[in-house]
Image (cartoon, rainbow, N blue to C red; front, side, top):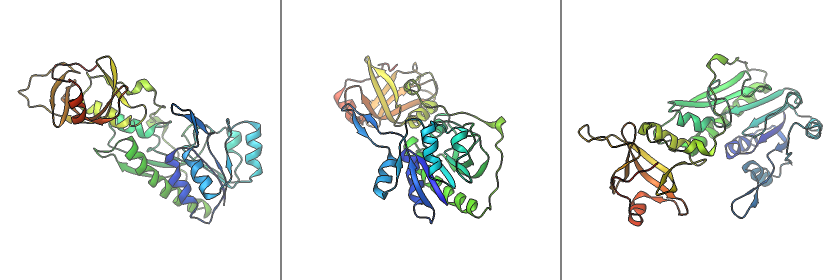
Length: 312
């Protein structure tokens, strides 16, 4: 089959690598335009573009995928199939009607749960026990098409947004290759999603990472893991932003009096222990505004943080 691959983020890379091992032809890779990043505003290509360059593939980077110019470009490729994975733009019905067969998408959740831009992050933040990858036939409505295949994955205690993304990206590759074989042999079924069970995972905003210490230690731990590495979970210490990268739940003995949420209760070799609305949180890795990221043990040596101080 003649396939056009749409993808931008690192999540899509294993799927493109897997696709290139098959007999199918990738006539073009469509990815987001290069962006200026960092303090030096250096221009940076997407992860998918970097792989496409390495493999000598044709690349197309429209600012807007639904313009007449883009539609005509895609039509000229005469594709049988579109494969869309973490591309970053919504495809119109006009674009979706171009391939001879149809367009498919790999989404990192058990659809219809967690539709939207950040399903991996919200699965962890929400404290879900499992998530997965779903392959769908695309429709104009976001993440709403019928299901071709899916796989459920347990979210482990030590999973964070980065480790879970890496795990799901490999599963997406395997499911994609299975779906392509089924489509080529016309041996697939389309299962409609139950929209009554739909939940949503909108793009994370910077303020979504703010820690509210009146919540339970478990909820705060989930937030820290789910916001790694964007937007990053944060609080304030002595008027400066304090980012927390790693922490775990600590259940104090019942005889220990409960301090007010956000107050430091202990500082020791294991980390900085902070009271929450339920249980406590041991901070293990953090970064104060203007400083580098460090282990709590190193932070304690350089800062006069002690029991009774407040994070807010």
